[in-house]
Amino acid sequence: MNWIDRLVEFWSRRLALRGSRRGFLTSLALFLGAACKLLPAPIERTQSQSTAPEEKELTEKTNNESSCAYWRYCSIDGFLCSCCGGGVTACPPGTFPSPTHWVGSCRNPLDGKQYLISYRDCCGKGACGRCYCQQTNETEMPVYQINRNNDTIWCFGAPNMMYHCTGASILGLAQDFHKE
Image (cartoon, rainbow, N blue to C red; front, side, top):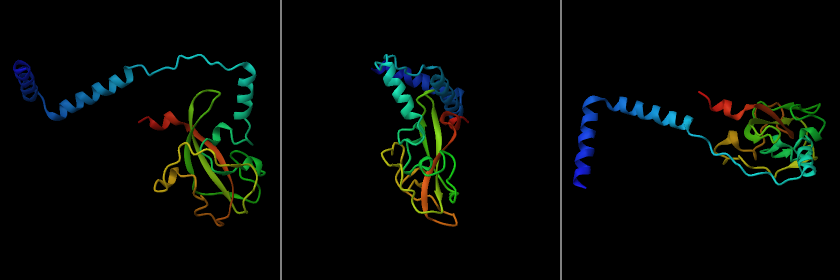
């Protein structure tokens, strides 16, 4: 083991004499960044065992805007505006969108991509009372990260704090927000 120690010491001292710590860290960061880009991502190679009628039912279920299973509602908590006279992105008449919102990331089963979704409460009337969805808390964070918590009434700053329903707007592809 003594010869390994001497070899490592020799190359470490040689490297220290020829370059700076910042240069070394820069080279290391560039190497790691290039390695992350070049290494292939794991790919699922299993075949789907579902039949055509099951796929059709899943597609209909995940595209129904009045169903809690609609793909945009993966982090929703509340009554669906699409059942209360509004739409997925529009508040019902007599209500107005809150100036604040929470954000979630949902996968669209039709194209397989992750989308950033803005969940905005519609305020101004009493609770709608139809199509209540609460089963989806996939990306909910604790209350101390309030912008990612869906248990809060998000009518802050609105003229009327009465909660009516919640809509879900697409902000864009989730991967686009990670680019620098």
